[in-house]
Length: 606
Image 1 (tube, rainbow, N blue to C red):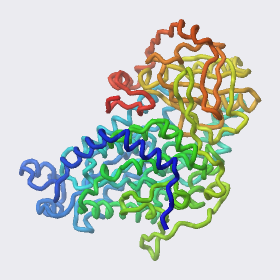
Image 2 (image 1 turned 45 degrees about the vertical axis):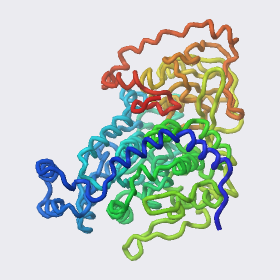
Image 3 (image 1 turned 180 degrees about the vertical axis):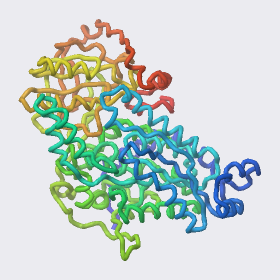
Image 4 (image 1 turned 90 degrees about the vertical axis):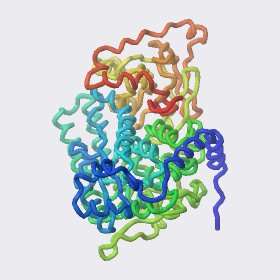
């Protein structure tokens, strides 16, 4: 029996389709022009082919010369500094062997950079973080530009890496694409304990050595960090959008099941390479994108995807905006509590039923589009299953019908909240987003005077000097994509949390970003227009009364409109720090970045 689609989900989907009619048509025309039957290397010039195959083993060269079997390109974000990407070190050999076992070939087409926001938080390198997404997209396109591949595998996990791979892959959207996760590290020090030590350190109650011990106990081995930030939101998205193998997102590295899933990913790419019009670009419809947003909202996922998903959609010719997120949030229930929205980590989420249970519940409630194409075939019901090893062989079985832990994952009938964890804020300061899934109800409305700074280090210094023992809204400006690359301001979370715990009314307003782990303090982020582009945030002064109301979606100043109009915004002098750690190389990107609501992207025109 077919299930009626929720009217809000249907309406949002339809308006995306209508808004995107021209741009989507142009994109599909590009794919049709690039698509051809048979191996893409067929008919290459002899010199071209010789260059492409020169380093391949003799048997592979024979297969490639026959121009009958598919050749699969591998784009990898491997490096051994990032715990999430270290497991990819040996994937190429595993995947090449899997291709050979099916009579085909595979080559590493290229590598892309992968940086860690957890390492660069509060450091100069963080200014490169957001734009690294666009660099990754371009590097992906370079890797696939040789036109000798019939499908591609994408090895990446973390914050900007998956969106960048996704955007780059869509430039070759005539090719089938399979995204291959590496899995989260096993659980270490609990997120609650880690957060407590961070707050104690912010108050000067524990030493740096104690803080470092706690952090190392939490981040302790290969694999993705276990909190539900942008990296793990990426994995959920790739699964609910049908680009991962079902149930593969949160299987730990180094396990037999993880290896079996990786081999199966290559086998799936090989199967898709022989099917007509199975390219990723055809697969990523408006319905698939709406499914991704619904999954993000239902799990309380990363606010970074209010930037990334918009840029990812645009790469496929779809125009998505914050109104779409906000309207979907009004009808999508919150079904998961994973840190920072709860005490559990992604391993607990996976054990409770994970993405397969989530998909089954949302499908049954008419909140997901079932009739979509996935790498497994037509229909999202194919993802309401979980993988397991049956006598050593990979198999799938139906998702659990009951959550394994109602404190972590719930059915729609027992949702943690009837609404998603994201709100659109609007008012005389512009438009911003706020994640409220971890913000208690009595903290969701803050009316307080502004404390204005131009760098998070200035606010940290005020706190250390005892200047913030009061109600206030921190205004951290000139943090937008055009100003300094839109770094995350995660170092503000512990100090604001401490002040809130003391009973002060506190909040944050910024044209910058917060981590995918946005927490318990209300934070109006991605404020647009940004200060450097003439946004009203640039005119706010210390002591101005501001209102941040998450319940009604209001962000405004109570300063008289005439007075605000008469004010001159400060002249922003970026200073030498902005150009440290390679940031000088990114000036062209800063100068050409789009607004936050259009993805803070440098690759597409507004």
